[in-house]
Length: 371
Image (tube, rainbow, N blue to C red):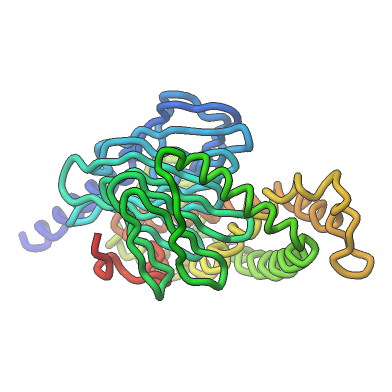
């Protein structure tokens, strides 16, 4: 009887985890321009009104794209999340005893939201590579520039920001910015013209890049080359993994093995090192890559294209290399994100990877926050 009870509890836990994993994060309420959803390693093509958005989906908008997501009740909140033009974001949703934990991993661009909690004690975090923002029941907008700077504008409620060292609260009617290598700085903003302020801020960041574009691009070229090499090295064993191939077959068949099954535990132990190695590199590499993609039109077809980053190697040569890498690189990144999702499905429905699951390794746990 005792063994049966333990098995029953395990099955129920797995069922709850699977239900949480399959519950939508929300549905697309509005869309315009070119907006793509990537799920389980594959692009689903252009987004449409009414489409569901699930945890671990990636949303990418082009310069003419915009998508508004109406949150599902599984998040414990009501309201909308807006992914603005030229943006890339991953959606996370983790069940928790204290309430659902939603995380938006903002790789590039701008997002905004109007939220209010409807049940329990839900939480929402937005992460960039340098700042994590904790939000509950608020209206806000977050912008990340090609230089890696971050701007947070709050028009209702409050946003708590941390860079892993300093913390600052952004109450309604205020804004803060965080530039690379600098501390948080409060900036004056008129809430009645907050959207125009954000557009002007992004334009000023472009002008800051243009002030010394060769130096900025040379730095990006160096970082891109190094991180691409590290990612390819980390990805090679994962791409050949028989365990990952098996997990993909199981997912295609709709199977989610118990996290406590001995075979699952062995598989997780064997593949965990490779997943962690990839995740460690990608946390920065994806952001560098999409910033370069955003700089592409500022380089190609302009005098900057012919300027040398080093003798015999121009800015145009660099952008053309990134373009040539793009298709294969994005496919490998999508496959890794799928592998990460499959791992988490076998880890009690998304408990995450040790030390790497939700950014806690960089920013500290939720217990360190006071929203």
